[in-house]
Length: 294
Ligand code: NDP
Image 1 (cartoon, rainbow, N blue to C red):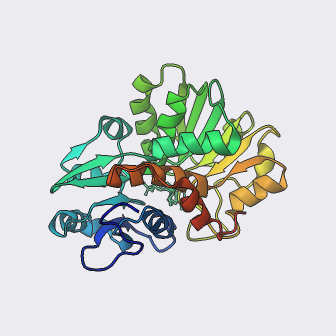
Image 2 (cartoon, rainbow, N blue to C red; image 1 turned 120 degrees about the vertical axis):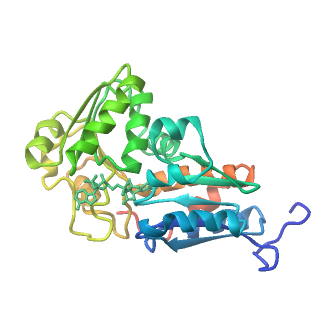
């Protein structure tokens, strides 16, 4: 253990890393990041805060006032928080969403580690090379933005973005155009007809909405038999027992990737941004092990 390090936060010189979201109680980030801080002997503590949209600016101001090391930003604040920090990384600006904030002596810098988290998780979990693949992405919020950029960077052949508010899907598809030279991008409403149209030829089906987060019965895909047998399914939402999307895809024999892998890899990048140290992936993974993967 390096000098000045502790095995547990001692409460006196302990510094805080936060998570702002609504809802936030479901998040396993506190468990995972605190395990990482302990593994590295850092006097840091990760706490989640239930922050409503109306009070987001106050919460961000508190990061400066209270000298937090930084915060993670989650549902539904990833897009709005961009306007409240002092600086945004080039990648996060391109994506249009931040999930990690670093407090550099009172100056807040926003980053997006979800893009790399999605890429790493797909590589590890599915051995999936996205190049030339047909991808169906459900959602157009902060997480979907990161996914869309990850797929465009990976050279997906076709990307269909479907969202409850079709206008947001169209906006994302329009913004993506310039950054997706190899990808034909389409946008549409999240409705059975559109799902059917795109799912039938999908190589990868991804849920980046909050469907299934609070209500276990919800799923963006009522009929997984629409997907071809070679299709892989990824759900950014995670829950004990697995989401309905993941469970039904598994029962059809499809390859699946749950949200825990994305959580792990986006969290590892955030850890390094806050601490300047390599993330203890093993300890972080172990901390998530007790959560049953569906
Ligand atoms: P946002 O609030 O930015 O976006 C929410 C998305 O969900 C929008 O596309 C929204 O559609 C859609 N949505 C919400 N309710 C419904 C509904 N009833 N029916 C259909 N669509 C709905 O949130 P984020 O993008 O930040 O997060 C989305 C999900 O991804 C969350 O569950 C979050 O926990 C998860 N996530 C997981 C990560 C991980 O590490 N595993 C990382 C990042 C996110 P509309 O635009 O119409 O409102």
